[in-house]
Length: 115
Image: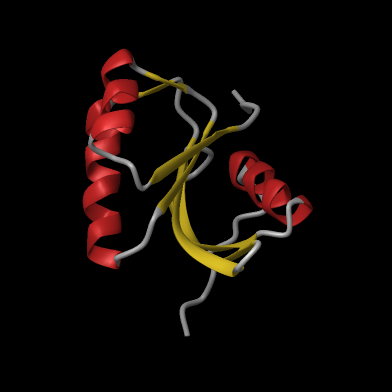
């Protein structure tokens, strides 16, 4: 059993977790990478065919680059799961292109920032 590392002092993490709660998304295996900027975990998202598990990465960052996406893609391949990227930032032009060509299993949800 993996213990969730929920840091109630982490404003960004709490913002994302509250978003999950209000959208019936169940998060588990939460692991903090850097306070107020980066954490990951597994989320179960309700769909018409039941809950679907996603590897979730949350980044409090102005710009999401193609290298951010590449790294995520590799992590998801190892876990054999689609990705949900929660971010406060925007994708660079190159990252947007890759999203439509290479990284079809990455879903990006932009949320309000806490800078």
